[in-house]
Amino acid sequence: MGKMTSVCVLSLAAAAALGWAQMQKKGGPPLSPPAETSVTIAGKAISIKYGAPSVRERKMFGEGGVISKDRTYPVWRLGANTATALHTEADLEFKGLTVPKGDYTLFALVNQMPWQLIVNKQTGQWGLTYNQDQDLGRVAMEMSKPPAPVETLKITLTQTGANTGRLQVEFENTVAAVAFTVK
Image (cartoon, rainbow, N blue to C red):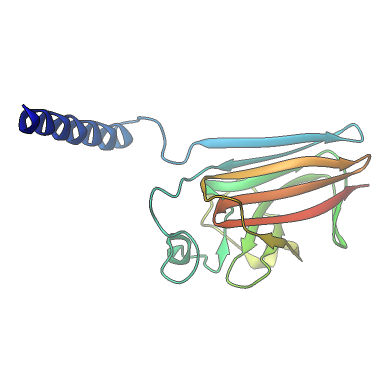
């Protein structure tokens, strides 16, 4: 009876894996679903929309990692699929970089420590389209490690004071964050 149970369990697991793979190809749930974070500070809304990839037992950062194979590497789109979009109703300041209210695309330079957050003026493009000439500017991010590996990319915007906030990126074994002020 033990052999028969093992064969049944393995058959069911194989069928489920095949079904999942076929669902991905035929319009099933996306591997990197859309995600969003937002915060209102001093009455002004700030939001980020991004694709949220999962590690799925792969190495993401560093030599040979999935991100190092993107054609824009060492610049990463801070997500998957379409470019990561920042919308702000207020002028922001990130460590001396003034970001006027409006729409931007966020990237990160990930082959050095600390990472550099890149605010880019080009919007609406696919995530692997990056034009450095469109950079509004770059700022160093604070780097740390999460208490446990982060399976799915998570970007958060949080309020830290009456007119201050924090943008944080968590993925795999990395946390990168930068403070900002609402002007």
